[in-house]
Length: 370
Ligand code: NAD
Image (cartoon, rainbow, N blue to C red; front, side):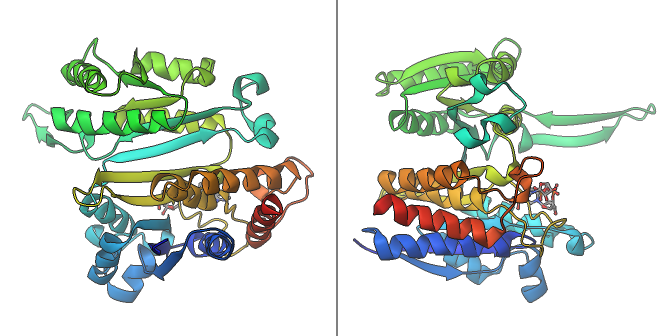
């Protein structure tokens, strides 16, 4: 099989501490799987600013555009609080998302059995949960124009954001959702506010039309986004794939994320459109959490979100479903055996370091293959 090119961008804070754990996993698959990954590294965020005065260099941008997948750590930290706005650490991530046209953000919420007690919801509601939120990432109210604060001249100001979606934007995100549902439990729930928003009416129409054009094998239901928020905490296991816009997706994916506990456990993927010639999508995989400056340098960071993000790359960029399942299983077994980084440890429970958790997961990969 041809070698797949990965660009690793560790970033700042705990980013460079959790990325080595992914490298162990990549090496394991290179040595033991029937796949082959070539890795390159680059700088992003504050570390890129320190080196080049930019949040990502043109050279690293070019590497990202050429890669089969970008594996991203985290950016930011107090050290760069006062750098100019356009070169702030987050600008590197936004540039990657924009230039790679990553319009689909995928956030799974999976409850590992060993952590079912850590949720704020009752165990039977959460145990075995496996849902996927597909959020539109490049349109909607975060980008629509006009976006401004105007002075009304009478002592009042007016803040305006514009929620705007075109047909093609809704169509392409719903296709991603239907296609992903086919690889899972074959059900999509589309969430909007068609009762009060014109963009919601169009969203509902276009999702329904797209469903009718070749995706009838997938079950489709529509739900108002506020009811969806309620259902997510009432009975989350009713969902498989949820597709929603940028604003509702931002909130609903955070709700879904917290169903399953710590930030250190949550992976994500951002995908672009399929290339016309190769069918491959541009893709960036990253943990949901930030650079955790409060624990950086202490060896306490949980590498699971980062490792599971690579698992999503196996699943969604490389169609290595079996390998992705094996990696998820290795994480679950390490947790079952009681391994805990500090963020997921119960009271009085012994903890392991970042690298010990990485080593344990790699050991479980070997044990599962024995
Ligand atoms: P954060 O996610 O970095 O940390 C929030 C809390 O969760 C902290 O207490 C932290 O120690 C803990 N935590 C996060 N990841 C963890 C892990 N893997 N293991 C154990 N504990 C973990 O959010 P924050 O503190 O609001 O932001 C810190 C910096 O990260 C800021 O500069 C922010 O702008 C940046 N940030 C970057 C991204 C990104 O790169 N995508 C996302 C969010 C925040």
